[in-house]
Image 1 (tube, helix red, strand yellow):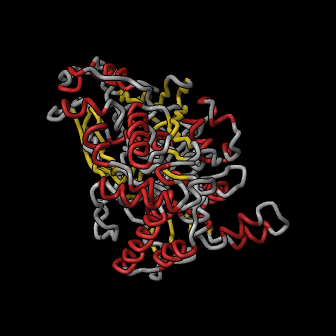
Image 2 (cartoon, rainbow, N blue to C red; image 1 turned 90 degrees about the horizontal axis):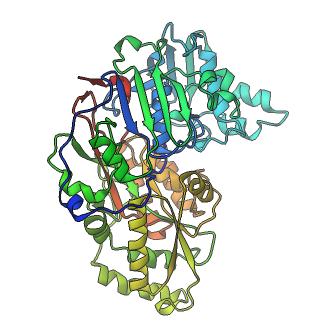
Length: 542
């Protein structure tokens, strides 16, 4: 999510069915009916928030990237970094100090000047308790004095804690001191938690967060309309520092919660982009070969999680039995048929240089024998006496099909009955965050191209760890890796951490995402990437 990658990838669509004709083939693309200076796409779910320091939803982050800018930003490929609100940055020889020089003349969407003090103020705001930032540890774990500042935020020691904080702002310069070298810290600066928020919107209850007339941003676009559960409209921000290079003057984000409806709107020319994985997976085989169809590997993993705070999943034997009896190939090749790659791994194989220690899996029937033994050892021979547990997921055709496949597999191989419960996206997020689940769907899109973007979420005190699982040994492996400058040694520590959490099974990996979508061929500048985010400012239409 992350974020964004946040964050778990939401494919918030209703259950639909597809005819055999749809599964075999799909109609050819048609001419767009949208304007040449407008980009219209399916946002899928209603955004949980447009506050860059509060959201953890992938789809919300896609919108936020249009409305906000960081000191560092992204090229059109979204993987390459470049100066944003800062005209340049440097890193000290020991890797502990980042210095950013503000770009001259940068402005907010209302014309106010953006200052170094506002950058610092915005980052302090991200650490306010009432903001409840899900990525708080990106500050407290890495920045000198940040954890002490948070701990003393409401105490008499706050003034001194703020003075000791490793974030300083002088005339046109922002400096950040780190506790230890973090090789990927520059990627974090280009992510929403470090985006710069206008002082009038520091309060999370500020009307600017919901009222477009009071919204003030600093990205290529500004908020023009937000009609809940219908659409969001963004207009070009004339005060953006690269406004002259922005070709698309209007972005319309529709909330379409039905996969067939999204496909039909695209076919009728009312959508320029379906968004990633927002049309039925049953259509994918018939869409391959079309010039407007895109499919690419991602930095993402689909991995339902167990609530280890509650019986029966407080027993690692039960968790491992469930993990062993997931028929991944059936789910990817027969149920979804969308080009996803079945996996037992947490970390997708798209990070150069990383070698996993997780072994290749045995056949499902062989795994089932081991799983039954584990379940019997846990006190549930052939599933007898196993309590009723609920698998929760957000409403979506693909999630529903996966839930049914998991339910059937666990019944077949373990003799246990699982109840399914689908929830609207916002309700689902709240329930998961508050630990009200037995098993819950989770998808994770990496925030930056490094193993840590996946491993950190299962650290004991990480706010995104919804499982309740924790291990001092695991935490130390990840923390030691963070301190290691030698990439080979760092990756070896990460591999050990991945193997440990795999053995403990607070989650069960099913597949690595592939992004698939339909894109109007008239749209130029769209570059598929493993993170699945795009800056519309680089697009044009012909």
